[in-house]
Length: 309
Image 1 (cartoon, rainbow, N blue to C red):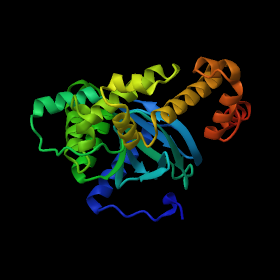
Image 2 (tube, rainbow, N blue to C red):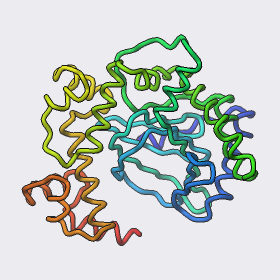
Image 3 (cartoon, one colour):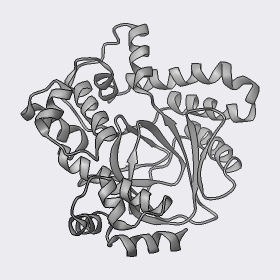
Image 4 (cartoon, rainbow, N blue to C red):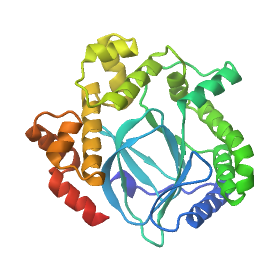
C-alpha cells in the first residue's frame, strides 16, 4: 500500500469547519485546474482534478496546505505526504517530485501555498528577540508537521482577504507575520530558525544552495563552493546532503536537467542546444541523464508533455 492509499484520519469537528470554509474559498477562486497567483501577494491557490505521477520541479521556500485531498512528495529516496491534517514546509529551494491520486472533477485537490522569504524570518527573529528555539543538527529542508487550530485559523483569515480586497494591504502583512511566527514556534520550527540565523551551518548550506541555483550551468568545483559557504569541504558535503538528501553534484544535475526541459518546452530549443545552454558538453551524456530523471529521452518526454497539455 502506497502512502497515498493509506486511510485519512478524520479532522476534529472545529478544524473540519475551518477546512470546509477554506476549501470553498479555494474552489470559488480557481475556476479550472491549475495554479493561481492571488491579490494577496505570496498566497497561491491550486486545483487539480486529474491524477498525475511524479513530476520533478524546483520547489521554492513555502508553506503548503491541503484543504481537500492529499499529495505525496519525494525528496531523493524519501517520501512525504501532506493533507488537511498535515502541512508541508520547504525551507530552502530544492528539486522535488510530486504525485497526486484518487482525484476527480467532483473531488479535486484544493490547496494553497504561502511563499516564504527567508529575509522575513530573519527580520521576525530580530524583532521578537530570543524565542527559546533550540539549535539542532542540520535537518532536511523539507518537512511535514501537524496542523493545529491556530495555524488553520490564520491561514483561513489570510485567504478570506480575497473577498475583501480593500483590507489586503493593511491586514495581509500582519497575518503573514503570525503564520511565520507559528511556524517558528512549531515542533520543527528550528529548521527555519537555523536557516535564518547568520553563521549557523544551516544558513551557510542555504547560501551554497542559493549559489548553485544561480550558477548551475557553470562547472562545479566543490572546494570553491565550500569557500562560498565558508565551510570545509567535508562539512559542506555532509550538511548539504543532510538538508537536501543529495550531494551538491546531484543537486546541480537536477537543476540543469529541469532548466533544459523548460528551455525545450517553453523556448523551443532542440535537445543539443538546451543541453549545451545548461552546461553539458556531451549530447549523449545529456540524453542519458535526462532519461534517467524524466523516464524518457528528450523528444519522447516533450511529446508526452505536450499531449498531456
